[in-house]
Image (tube, rainbow, N blue to C red; front, side, top):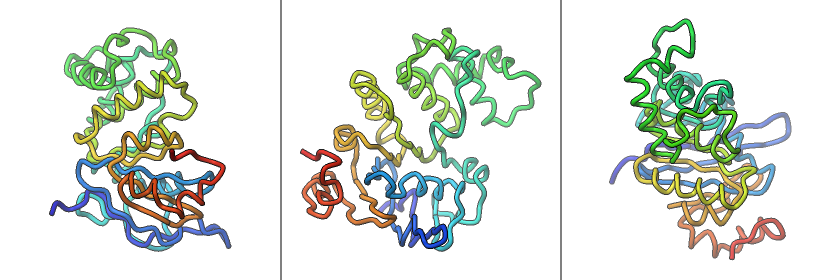
Length: 251
């Protein structure tokens, strides 16, 4: 059996008397898209921050790609291929779409440069950037200023910027937030195309998207995993329905 790319073992985090993570344990398999869902305030974003190292644990271990990374800082985890989309890099609105991705590729390479825009003149970086833009459906937008993109296209751009870091795991924190139905459908198509090539942890409130995309779903309520399994098993779980009563539609 293939070892999981990510293992969380008995994670705990509290702020005073408030337990935001309370004994969370779960695995993410190689090539798996694992969704984490739960009501507002369940601790989902905090959990993502614990995985990346932005939030220090009170107890528990994070194992990534066979290595205990619990004590490693954010940048060291990122260098190992643990990539958080939408928060690792901000879109530069005055740069073109291509320059944004080329700059992200240059930053990953660790190249020294005096001006960000010099990345756009590097043929190798441009080729890498264009390949990533093709993966997210933005190749035709390459020469446009990033500021001209729609909200959904900017989210696609940020995924392209994450891809050039050569991730071993993508952490996606509400990638469809603020999108209309058409933009959501485009993002679902992008993630579906990436699925199986990159392991992904997806935090998302759009249940229709989650149940279409996820191989497995873990449900977080008050910092605890109350259910974990296939979309079908989670959909039928009475405890999950109760936790979402009046808030989410699982039909």
